[in-house]
Image 1: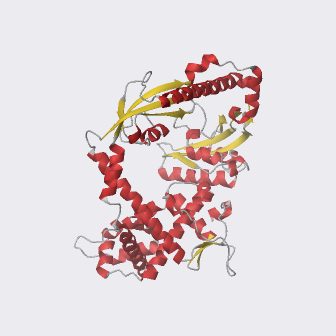
Image 2: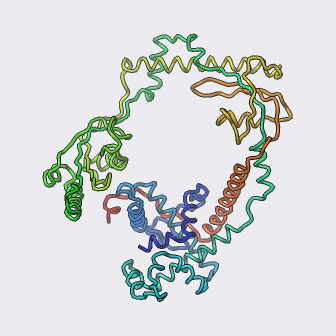
Image 3: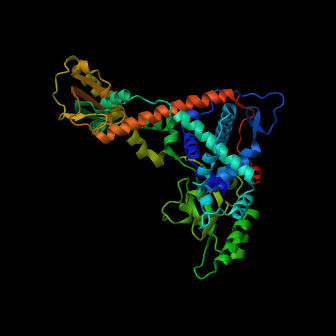
Length: 488
């Protein structure tokens, strides 16, 4: 397939990587239609529309390529990703055309010879099998002119992107400064105020417990779950593969065409209808990893609109080599707030924990106020340790950020950091020093990260310029596909 042939081009791999960078979100695009816009037009680039049908077809092909199902191709987030990809392709195409980039004949030949499918067409004597080449193109709905044009276009894109990638990135001096910030060490002592040490001082009343339950009902909600039935088609090792493939086709067609019941397919293929209760969005509880209802695709299908709301069979899902599954929802049990008497102990635990945490935080606040008047007082603190951003020890998240943000000219210093669910910690920062030894690998990795961020920023500006030049605009809002459109 020449979709896969084109994937072997490094430039397209690079461009596909850029699709996931948040910098390329579709901001700044006008959202209203002009006089001649059509209802099926989703967006336009340089006046050329991207239609809903194009997105449907591309979404279906991409879903098949990554092993997804119809529901994935229909989903709005997936379709939005496909639209973004099509927009990127059109914008880059516009830039190539506007700049009148050219590709030399030898450059095109060298590029084609790197494609495995093309290399395979050379005979042992070095001659090229032009007949097989034309057959390969024809099987993919292309002629030679179209193929050479597409490969030439890819090389022009490569020229364009490489010219941006060669733009001067972050200077070595900036990398040195950032690495120094990550390597510089601070001597830190800690003083813990844990909620567990204050639990004995908390005794909530029944009125307080009831009030907390009523105000936080969502915390005591049982998630929705479903009771399902399913059938499994397994290949018999003694069975001919062709015969099994025919059964698999029957299985898929019957569960889809007669989607209101599994019985026709079960009767035809002599399969037993099995059942399972209490299946959540995380799967069936207590089943083995290879169980049909432990498979993410099966669960995703069961919780899709077709199965959950319309009570239809799921599509046939291959859960393992030679194993196909189809399932249906028998009963939906909506999410429900559990009665107070069923969760009374959990209510008390949460109320007590929160109250103890408030006491711990208050005690930490009082201690911090006293220490700020006398920061040299180290009484009660633990053993001092040297930490840095490269070697944070036990400090994570806000703790390391707060400690490293203290002005080194104002030491010793004390700060308090809240740790939700646990309590608060007071940190005492006494000294600062340069790292005794530089980690060469970490230093190199940081420099590469800085360069990568600079490259992303550079390419975002580049794409923004050409997006504006191409007059990109959204015509109609993208919607989740219907079953008919996705399957066409």
